[in-house]
Length: 389
Image (cartoon, rainbow, N blue to C red):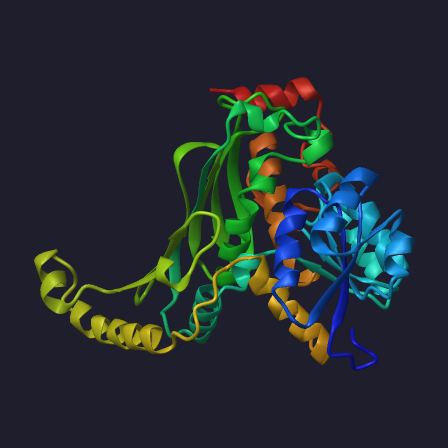
């Protein structure tokens, strides 16, 4: 969206809490951006943030968009994303929506309907797609250079104390829409799906072990993909040695990224198949030597394809988005492209609370989980399922 061919994008921010500062720093670092307006339901918060970033504090969304704003970052609590985004689309603005985009599929589809009739468009913050390591991995996996994915592991092992849930909107379905699977693990889940493609089924367990919350503090899932690959996905807020990790074992080797809240190229590793001697010592099929030739080629390509190191942070995605909007190019991390991630999260809760395997095709509007991640089930049933040993 740049009908006038400007070389500077005018942006605004709605919601002036902690995550807004990540957006503000990313915009400030881009000379093609002018951050002109901010808004918050708390006028004092808006005034303070506006003073920090040199912008105008606006009293309403319409006032913000009236400042000739072309792109608006929505950094409000998850449960408010839908109404805010629909209103901004109605005002003709493009929206960069913080994760999770919504708290249920019904809201995601409501935004999609508003987007279809607006000159604006919606993009979602999944910055791990935009670091140079993920771009390289995505391209080489899609080309088949790194072999065919067979097994994967996706882990978000973080630590949050009880006090993390002190704010009134945290720790409950009404405020957050879901637990750490939705609010924390969704980043790694999105990257896994981005790299491996269409998923088909989920078998999951969401468990409340220790934290004073209405939902889970740990979840585990077994996933099947259309390609035939399988994966395990674990999300925890009880893990003192924090890490975020994705490992993909292919027919040519192992691709792995391990970091915490954002990776650099140094956090990515490629391990080729064992050479013939090692394979023989391990009792591997004698044909392993021939297969290792292919993995050596993959290693050469992985190494040779390294370019400028771009960390996976807000600045990486915002840099890409600003460039795309100014050039009139499509930006890949659209609302539609992130729906499979929200479908996966929905299926995980549905599988855990119903005790059944859930397929993507099962997530229809007549299911309670389409409208709420707790399925609209009675609170005592949800508690029983998530507390069961």
